[in-house]
Structure formats: structure tokens, C-alpha cells
Length: 388
Image (tube, rainbow, N blue to C red; front, side):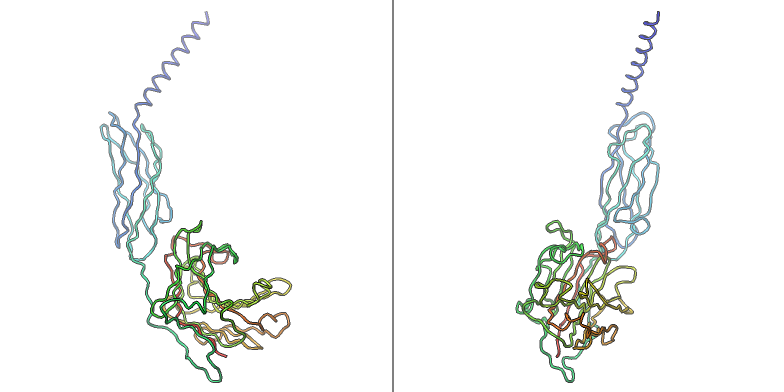
């Protein structure tokens, strides 16, 4: 008879499955906890513990391996791939990860430890986050060296200046623009501009770019303008300043036509006295001077200048000499760019312009900050002077 045979086979299969299910229930789970470690200035070790829910009378194992986050193998820690064995009766087992310390100020960084390939054990949580706490101070300091320009020029008169010698920002000269990078100025910038990021320190205007969450932005900075307060047509402009540095950092000293709100951009014209897009690939020593205007669409003309050292190391003077014929750009009195503004299409450059100072973070041109970018960053402005 076939029925009893089928019944017997199903009964045996049920018993076997029940045994397997009971065996699985007896398997211990292994878990790993996230941890923090101070970076230090030399190599040190983090002991990481694996724990079983209960001991068993047989050996078991699990693989552990490290996975990059903002911390990078070979730069911040030593890569690890290891089989961790628990002997019969053992409930805990540990291993060490080598942390590569240095004395470079940087943000806290993270990487992961992943559990894989369990043998006779169940993985409870397969990933732990390891945070390397940076213990190197990234401190603010004002350089004592750098280029400077005179307070007088033959045949010219100083018509306006801000030496930033008062206790606070002079509201007769400057207004703060507030909001995120895509509110009114675009470029897919990441920062939120706020007044709090600007201060006067030892006779300098200081704009600080921070890694700080505010209104859905992960960075904050400041942007100051003289629109409606100080504007000029022609003259020599000198701005003595120290730049910030780093991937995704975008400082600028520039001008827009005073009719910007009436005619829009680029019809109002734009004069970038200097801008720099930071980065560890040799960009922190390169500045650019550019003009933008409307000629049946956006048109621009600019040139760059490469300094021997980073623009963050000491003061430099960024200048333009602007008259009815030309705009000429200077870096420490070296002329590196000139544009003829006599063609009718460049008529915007014969009107009044106002000043803008800002430090953007991220955007289409510089790209976003990465794990090499140190925060905060500072742009330090000693003076701005206009001669005519």
C-alpha cells in the first residue's frame, strides 16, 4: 500500500526538520558594538570585542574585515581581514585594529567593521562603526607676514576704505546676505550664510566657514555686500587678505553692477577681483580674475595666476585697476589679466559696481568637501581701499 509509505516518509522529514530547527535555536549569536578611539600622534591600537549570547561545546568562527568610510585604509588605519575563532566554552574574543595617528588637524572620521561567513554561529549585527576622534587642534591664527600696498598713489586719491579697525562690522558699509547657497545666488552651493560667522579680530574682517547643520545645510559661512551703501565706477581697488584652503572651499572678493536687482545677471556685469577653488591637488595656490557680462547670453573672460605657496600661508593683495579702457587684475602688484572694455557689448563695465566678500562651500565649480577638508576655514581681510 502506498499511503503508509508516503506517510512514513513525511513523518521522517518532519522529525528531521524539527531536529534542524532545534539545532538552529541552540546556535549562539555573535554581536559587535560600535566604538570610538582617539587618533593620537603615533600608531596606536583599538581592541574590538566580539561577544556570543551563550557559550557552546564546539568551536565556531566568523570573519571580520574593515570597510572605508571617511577614514581611509593606509591613511587613517591599517586594513584588516581576519578569521576570529571561538573555542568550545568561550563567550568573548577580541582583535586589534591599528590606528595611524598624526598631528594634522582634521574632522573626526569613521570606518566600519563587517562580520561575514559565520560558521556554527548566527550574526546578530553585521556592522559596527568605528569613530576616530581627532585630537589635533585646528586653531585660528593671523599671519604676521605678507605683501602690502601703500595708502597713497601718485595722481590718485583714496575715496573709500574699510580698515576693519572698529569693534564690529561697519553697517554703513556692509549688509549681510542670509540664507542657503541656492537662495538667490545658485551654483548648487552647500552652505547657509549667517551673520554669526563674521567677526572683527585684531583689525581684520574674518569670515569663518564651519561644518555646522542649519536649516538643512551641513555648512555655514558669511556673505557681505556693500549694495546701496558703497559703490564705485572706475578706480584702483586693493584688498589685502589671507585665503582659506581645502577641497570644496570657494572664497571670493568680487563686484556686481549696482543695477543687479533691476536688470539681473549677467546683464549687470560681474568683476571677480579674485576667487579660488580649494583642493589638495595644487589648487590652494591658484587665483583667478574674471569678468562676466551679457552678450546674447552669458560671456566671461578670465585668467589665472599660480603662486609659489598656498594663499592661506600669508597676506596677499588682490587688486584691479579699472578705467574707461580696461580692467587690469593684479596679484601683489603683478598684472596677470587685462580686458578691453571699450566694445559696446561690454557697456555694463562703465556703470557703478558694489563689493561682495564671501566664502562658499561646495558648488558646481569646486565640488563638495571631502575627508581631507578641515573645518573651520577662515578668510581674513586686513583692508579694502578704493583710489580714483
